[in-house]
Length: 391
Image 1 (tube, rainbow, N blue to C red):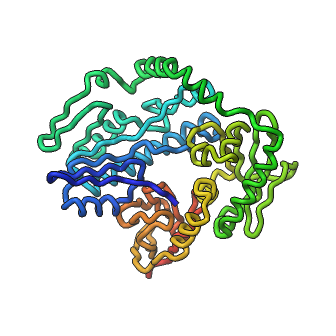
Image 2 (image 1 turned 90 degrees about the vertical axis):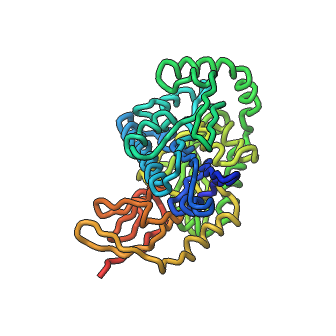
Image 3 (image 1 turned 180 degrees about the vertical axis):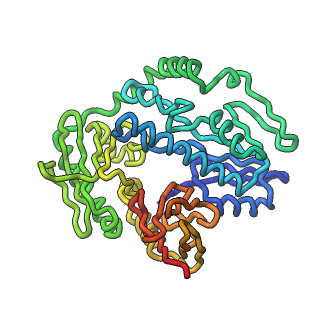
């Protein structure tokens, strides 16, 4: 389901593994190290992934704080275990956090808070990782910094050295940044006009087309998604995504959606006209979401994100054709369970990339949790683990 890319560069006897936007499994990172000759001089590891959860979700303040902290710590723990399994000479946290410059989304800059924000900046990541892996070397870098791999010497860029992610300095920087980009932002926003009266008809056509791409995905989604479209020619529209049929209708009392997505018509129109993909819109944070129950549906996001029959078929073939012959035994609460070695979601090696607690195994690659007694994924709509009691 996840189409990411990492870069392994080997030259002049040195090796750099750059995680880029890839949430590498421990097995993948160790394979890269093997390909590099058994040594990684530098590994850049993602500690702040691009995600609209929980920032775009409609949580009460206390729940938002709880979910944000859990997301932050989960990401750092995944990075910790990846670095521990790979043991590079130097590990470099990177990726994010984002910042928001125009008025429509500037309120989301709370995610930058170094203590409570959902995203972790490189400085905060280094502090946490050094505390939890004291024998591993970590550094963070700014634009213009340079490292000499032969000696380990670091040259800091004098301009970047004046920047800090902390509180007041960061806020002043963002104010100047927003002012500098104000005219450019206004020009971009002006290029997205309000949609015409045919918006609903084009919306319905779009989802009927999506629904025809994969019966397998419809079986896994099996729910109603309500779109609350604000602005001219908007409305509340229900999309039923269920096996054998896709329905699109104006919302009616008594229909209970499992997902609700609120979006301005001008942004929805960008998807319907092909100017943006759904993932681009989601990652722009210019929408809000609500789930009832609060369970992530990987297949709904996958259908929107890929919107391509060949890609969806590849996911189906992976999930229905997995080789589960390689298995491991894990223990919890005095019981033993025989499970496949590799996570059914994205192939993480659960023998080294998971933790077991309270009768569940938590895959650290994407934080999917499976009940060991039933094999069911408890925090997302995903394929079952295939767990069984061990003798």
